Length: 297
Image (cartoon, rainbow, N blue to C red; front, side, top):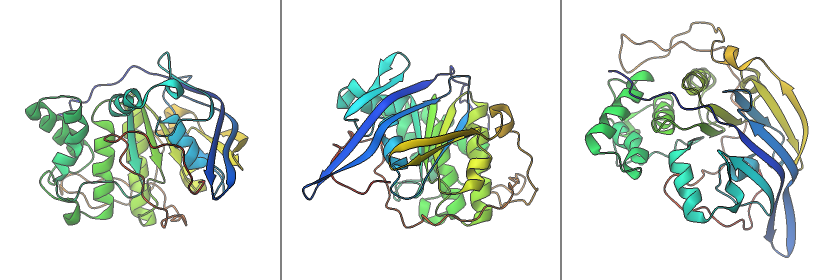
């Protein structure tokens, strides 16, 4: 099946002096302290965000994606400051301009793989026949050509996460956010999913921001930003973005839905220790929550 997903116009996101605090139990926790961050300035790239638990990694991702509103600072995307948008505007932005992949996949169990991928298209008022064609095209591109009608409970962990990747990319987003996308997978399956996520995102002209604990995940990204206590303490280039999607890996095939389609595996990555982290609400369908009390990640 032909993939109808077009390449997007390259876009950059620039955030400056981000501050985010959580109030709870009579105390104030500063999750972000004057953070500057950019992605996609020189063209499509994959940027890893690393740091110990509680360093503010996920808080940064949620602010960049418009899920949380910062207490101070700016997040500029395509000429607008996301931080000053109303909730309804940010919800529309997440549906049209951004894609999301989370550790748990966030698939709706009562829907088929194809129907799960169709959700953002239907929210964008795409007709159902066209939405189904595009959804099935994305699934086929990710090695799931025989799984259109399968429900999440009938899929392996790796297959379910590939469905989540298809859903993230099907609208042609300019930027994809991934929060521990391989955290619930074994190291071999996680390596395959990571390779697909990077290749499929960059090849379409979009950029990728990946929150991870795993240095091997960061190694195959274009560069890595390190956070400690809500502050950027380092930023290093891993490899050129053009090479990130062309990295050569040992060819240990992962089982594909179609026996004729074998998806190559990257080098085996150690499963990182954050598989216990709670799921994040599907950001495409709901208004952004208020910045209230909660764990800083």
